[in-house]
Length: 399
Image (cartoon, rainbow, N blue to C red; front, side):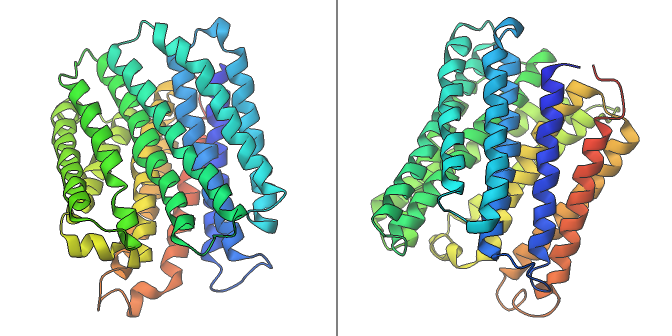
């Protein structure tokens, strides 16, 4: 078994741990477990984002660009970052952001810098297609940009400005450029790799990367506006970014759908990629609603919808793309994979339906949608689904 298959299973195991933490969080309306909810929430988010998404896309880039004889330092960096995640798993539930947990999160950032420093030369001299090289470099650049928010957050907390807009804006800076920048462009690279393997070219990919970069930079304008930093000129620029995102949506549908839908054989890889494409289109529909300024300016007030939007991207797009790569690495047993996949999908859809319905005035603020049992049931489905998917990657000799 290769290093990547072992590392993939480890990262998938981390996803299962994050899902279990989600089940515990959904039990808080009934039992507190003697732990602070916010501390456990920070644990859940750090483990899910860094131990699963970051690790998965990092592994893909090492697998794609670094020759096997030069992979030893990247393997050590991977295990170092996962040890940092383990440290966060143990310390965040106890104290949240504090003297024990902050060193582990800082260590992860520093190790990610070392990984990028090592990866860039291999990407630059790689013989892989230009779209893969340029996309990977752009994704890594977005990660570097996102971590500026983390350092800014440390300064804000040191100056005791936690209850000011600066604190929220630093957090949103990290989340925005990590999700819409690093993870989205990395998912683009994974999808492009599999299309190129099928002999499918991606005409216009340079313009697509440029438009996504423009849209991502403009997208951050919304968050200062939530805190009263408003300018009509900036809002026009934000809308230009929305148009760029919608153009990318149609480009991806044009590139992907004919080659993944027009086939009689439904493989795990193809199903995962089609799910990612469908949820990406759904995400873009939600983004299009922000064209209406009244919706954009008040969207922050609907916390359930914001949480649903983040999970929509995490579980519906990025996780599906990584599972598509996992299916390529392992050839999982179909019955375990499909049972896990549809169990996970049921939990995902139930969770998103409940969260978004809660955000609809006069409908979601009363009655069945406020029952915590629905989100608890959804979390159980997500945990069972991710566990079965992990088991499907253990149950057959790997490629």
